[in-house]
Amino acid sequence: MSDEPNTTIIREGGGGAMWFIALLLLIAVVGGLFFYSQQSGSSVAKNNAIENAANNVGDAAKKAGNSVGN
Image (tube, rainbow, N blue to C red; front, side, top):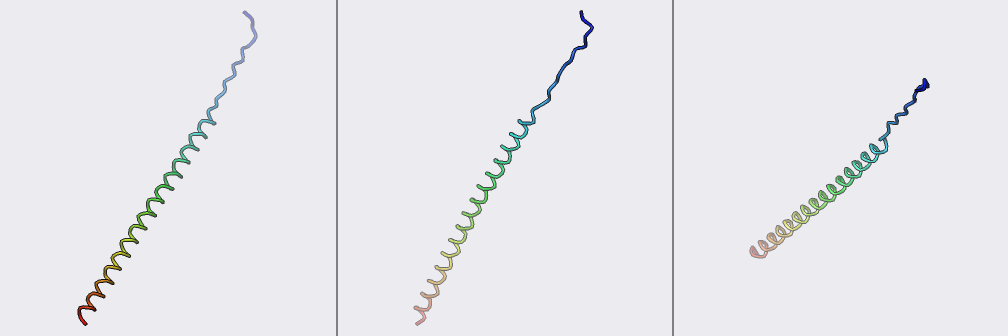
């Protein structure tokens, strides 16, 4: 055997995998927020349509009441 010292090189990496997972998580969060905002927008539009329909029914009832009263 020789008396020369052995040199061992240890590489600790994996930082690239962590960035990839973080990027995927960020994309998932942004996508979820987008779909949530779209859902909220349709709910507001539905509520506005119901409110407009109720107002139209109320106006029609007033006109009918005025016609009967005359």
